Image (cartoon, rainbow, N blue to C red; front, side):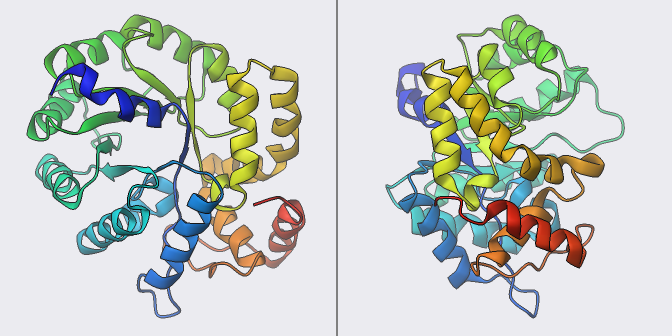
Length: 303
């Protein structure tokens, strides 16, 4: 597949990339009916790119069978209404198998979670992603980068080997580092997605990002899309007004090294009567006092 064939996928990344939650039933199984309802709510709210099996979807708490089920359900429910960027990762054979499953299910892209290994080298990072990208040359591949030590030249080398590496979800909480990394890798070569959601989107857009991830979109997609509109227009005063509005919600998610990243989103959905608050360890539901605070923050937010 030539680079030009990825044009529509690149456009899909330059947008609000929503990370849907994975709802559970009272007996801790996938709540497929609620999952479909929440996906339809995202789509009806204007979201056009979704990432099943992202971190807000509790990727690491799902079994392999559940991750496949989430992929298939999402692709089936979304149809042609949005682009689907399937989260994959873990050990290399598992990641390749998940990428091949995503392709067979009808996805156009995969997002490769940061490799989990205590002794990861930068050259090994390139090798890991190369094997995945070469296994699914028809799919757009988006590395999820959380390692501040990784150099942009390694991403450039990966793309030289694999032209289907078309975008980057960059989630290092350092806007200066992002600006340098993007330019070292090739600012115009990739679609740069601010991977730390709305809280970092303005500073990352100022340095070259054109899309951002969002868990908040589960709760109020219009808020996320309005922020995107302001950033696309270069209207930073308007963008920062939205930023100020959502800052308390996002800071609750980011507190304690993002321990409550998913918890706060599910609590907000529960307060709106849309989803159970149930999570799986090592995540944990909020104490009662904080539940009230979350409900107060999102009350009145437009869908």
